[in-house]
Image 1 (cartoon, rainbow, N blue to C red):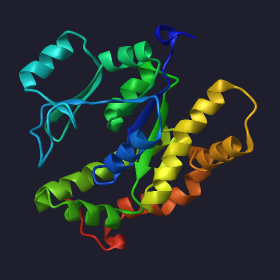
Image 2: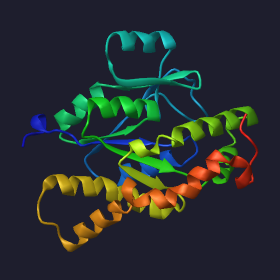
Image 3: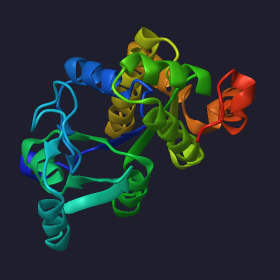
Image 4: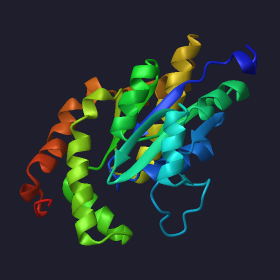
Length: 239
């Protein structure tokens, strides 16, 4: 199959802010070949050491809205007063380069992609509980308390969408989570190849299968409960 005829596997990764998604994605890109990362466009201002074209493409609302009118986005959504979007060109570039595509997008954007690309593989990253998520947000020291509480409230809403995803990765232990995320990506490639798997390849598929939605529902219950009843987790009510 020529690169021009290649149909990329598309991986969607979503997670509440502070779940460790960026770290996991960075490690995945280092270890898995032939995987392109779609850098989102946003109207929010850069934070800390963020630079244009690396973490995001930072554009004005006027420019972003013009891109919407011109149909340049596969998906776009508004979160916390800022616009975020995935440009169509990344999918075209992946096709031309014979590589798969990784999308780091929120649940609104993921829903749009899933409607347009029904074969996309979706992965939702969860913190082990609400208290841990709040601790991680505070440790980052990027936001004031009001913003942190707003992010926790948003996380509660986002997590309710977990059952729209193919895989649920509970990011409790970083090294283990990295290994599992790699396994999910490689497993989908192996399954599409449709050939007899080696022993090591079968183990990769088995590791990924442990995180399929149907196989983690029981593990999810205490996590979901911690967000529905934040007082029980030792954290205050979100504002």
